[in-house]
Image 1 (tube, one colour):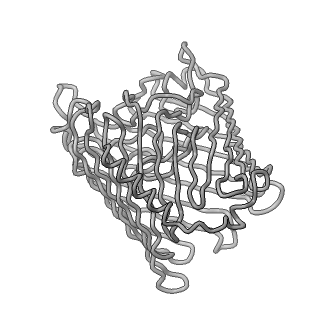
Image 2 (spheres, helix red, strand yellow):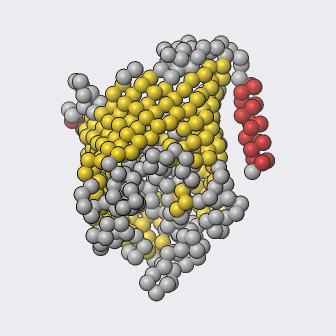
Image 3 (cartoon, helix red, strand yellow):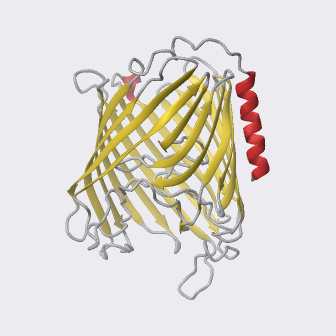
Length: 441
């Protein structure tokens, strides 16, 4: 890792040193106050999961449910003027319980909207407060504190009431046209349903790990408006090394018809003290689709060639695979899956802001016979699960107000159904999400 760090720093130093020492652009010279923004997002979130076979480790009745309201305030300053600019980003977030009901929400409940107290009941409220200092030198921005990285290997999650965050140092450089480089070293995380900002790292499938830091580096390059590439790597100390490569493309055929698609590839190997055992996974997905007018249809295929689950940080969006959807990731050992997705934008039919989406995915051949003990799943007789299958169907409708005092307020309903053999749950899920963003400054 030391050699890799030296190489990464050398590359970064070369980029900075090769950038002409030109005057800061007018866009960058807005100033600390003039370049500031203050936004408030109100998020009303209802979610339930109905375990069709009664599998619920928390409530005991096969049903989990929660309704809550989140208020997310974020202030981002501009940068002080000069060759080196300084600024701050701060946030304050509040989560309020509206209803959970008796027996519908348990400790660590699968809904994951609210924290629970020592008696296993949802807390009435919880909060998060944090911030980061930032420095800009030419086209490079460094942040230290509570950060929200967005890369294929480390991406904060925002699919619950309050967003996830990490604590550490990040950098972003955009010296070359079309190329964005990102890197960071993180030492703590804060999941969506907790107040503490200094939690240990936790993975989605294997749970908590005793890792002192997480580092990542990579970049995105846009060759043109129709073609882009991404390349990243990360290290979760004593847990894993992950590598990602991806591409996305689109090709207009006529004014109303275009082709689009992309590829995603991950490789993950154990690292250091191998806290999650020995593994050497690679998983990929590919997608191709066509957009014609208001309609879009896409077909994707995904395959895990490893003997263990492809894991990632819990509640994060650090999995850029086409078949990682609302509930299922389709990333079990040796699992192969395909998905068909349809999108409809009603603006072409005179209703701007209204959209629909539906998709169906099916996975097969999941096989735990060679999995390590951390990721092993067994049947009631103690034998490794083999030939496991599952499918998931998602339906979503969303409407965004286009005008008036409530402009940009959105209403979204999401329904999910999944069925599986022994290794996963059979469940139905409904999410109702109302969001109202307000720009104060």
